[in-house]
Length: 359
Image (cartoon, rainbow, N blue to C red; front, side):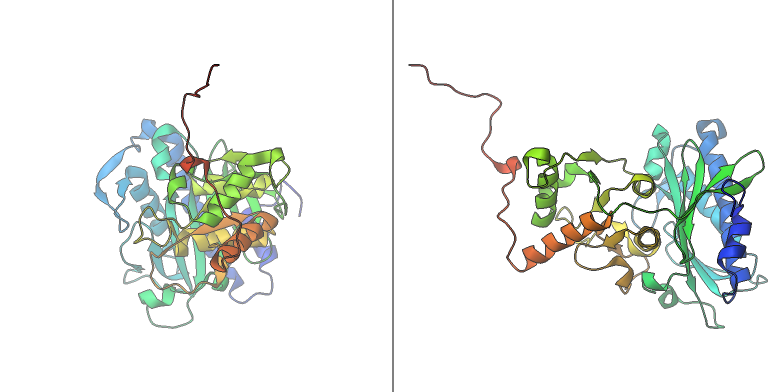
């Protein structure tokens, strides 16, 4: 492959040569790329196209929808429903799986997606993205919800698009993780980042510290060690990042390493985690592992989880392998009662004013 000259279509033909249904999978991913181009155009126009702002309705998660959430969802459905490549679609923005209309042929795949991850950032012009997962559907019957509930290890393809200074499509079909950049002059995705590899070690972590008071002790332990820097147990300084857009966080990790944490916490005990397993955690975990990283809930490998619900939430910890393994070890030590005592400066006695006795 010639770097900078390999189009997405050519890449998929090469990657999927000899695989069953390779033509249909390649065609489906090209359709997904077409939807990404349409979403990219809308996000780029922003207020000029009247695409910003919220609408007076919520999704199945109870979250207020943005105009771009609905438009991005429609773009993905329109690009993929008609070609006889999918048997059904499921989305963050739809309560139930989307049924392929009468008159359209059904195909051997299921497409599960988050049409616009980080959409709350659109009003402030921060990078957002689209996440997608492709699963097999081997039955002739129209899929029921249970047919979507496959573990992440069953994915045949996964990827995301990031809409930033450039629009990039990052995907895997089980043979590494690869990045493509949209060349707007020719309207094609060009391979620019082949065989992405995440360093096993890193000195950068991403977590929302506003939730620190709700974290479990293993997460407190890890973050406190990172904050201690050279003076602490880790013996080196760490940088902290938080963009509040999973796609943007993961893209940075794929480009230069790091660890991303949206761990289990006690803020809302009814929710075992914050991110959605089927169309956020699973596809991203596949990309991370294919790039040499690791992805876990803190207690279990993400790709091994058996989904119970379409919109199921899970904790997510992913990125550089050695950092993720350390956090997993801290969770195991905590469960066995072997972890070090944790002392949080948040709960120490402290004051803005120091008193001093004068003799």
